[in-house]
Length: 294
Image (tube, rainbow, N blue to C red):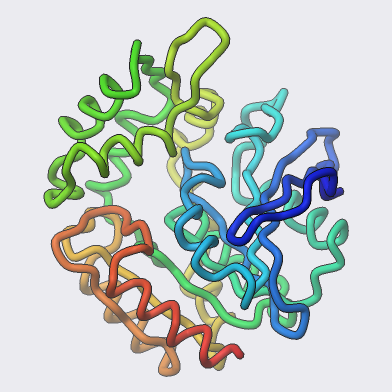
């Protein structure tokens, strides 16, 4: 159900909510766009929320309808009672309920990291609904070093007294991922990852319990992701990889491009996991993908 109380501004969104099968109230952002094209469904990474796609959605809105759901346990979506529901199978069920709520017959799926895994699984299970896809720094095989790094920090709640403290902490921990960032970029990233609570603390904006199933090997993806990737064969696809990624290796990215002859592989230079999709190389790849979809 979309909140229509306030008229949209150019590049703005309407907040909407839907219900999961197990009774969670889930949130999405809905950027208005043309009805004669597939909607763009933007799916964020493991610990991320709808703010990750603010720049992308604002640039595309108007020409394209952009829908950015927040998976359970993130942002304004409800936290699950059972932490073992924080797995791809449940996320797919949540998305199926969203498709029914919004009567979405055709979507182009933009997925970063976990969102890209969901994009592949959607292509495998609901291929007629998926018009095309962008997979951002993720593939059917994930590099063990990157998975170990993520397991090392996910579920550890951090808080900071000011936004500047949060930005400097992010810079210290991630300078190898975005070596060209200055304090303005780190501050913008902090405001995507954190929220201000009622006590005045700046906290990570997700349920720390999402770490519980992720620590179990195999729960980060599906059983046969190469077969899932094959669901995108014959569709417009963009494969985005950060040059310094520790999640998607160059060899796996090349194999993906070989498995999908219609796909375009683009590398974002001097960037780790994961590109924001606002980099010039990624933005141009998005435009070429959408030209094929249009």
